[in-house]
Image 1 (spheres, rainbow, N blue to C red):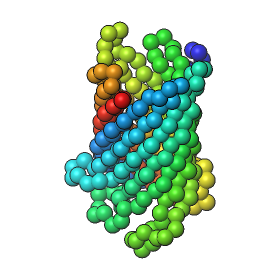
Image 2: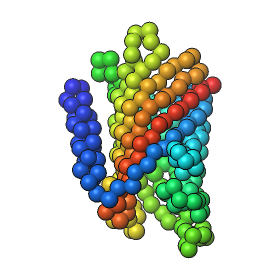
Image 3: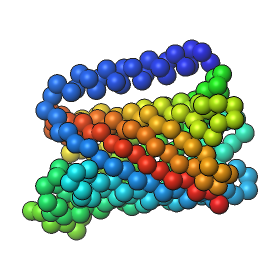
Image 4: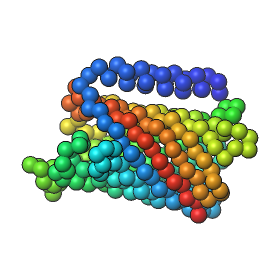
Length: 241
């Protein structure tokens, strides 16, 4: 178990080091505010149904950047594994910088995931592997086309969570998620992006918890020479029925 924790820590350090290296390239920089509402309904046999809505906005001046609505079903197994599948409807306001919105590009995004959780001392360590199939509407001359571009993305997230006291309702969270392009003939880059997260969670009751944290989002664009470096304030509400 200690060896696994050491490997996980090394992965985190390598990802951060890679981001620093890429920061010397042509980089688009910006700041965002993300707000998320999660509605969770536990069912029998370790099954959960989750509905979520997330708004992503530029900060100063304010305008919509992206929006995502997701439905997810997961099932916890007896050996620490959790399997699940879901579907997201995604909207991106183009262009991706602060210029005036030209078109809103929709995306249909089913996904499958498997995660594993274990304890190491006072830490909870969670690994999540996800595959996303993405149908993104093409844009021609600034207008939505009738056809879609298909791509597939693979994601791996390492998350560490620790309670801030035996009787505390607060816990600290550190995570890093790497994403890779797996099937798209029009994309030259295998590495897509990495998101590093540091935050706090407060469990107000058995039904309500709040998240607040910072996300550093680093992305390589398909050109392989242009990158994005985004700083994000993340706010979330989790509501369990």
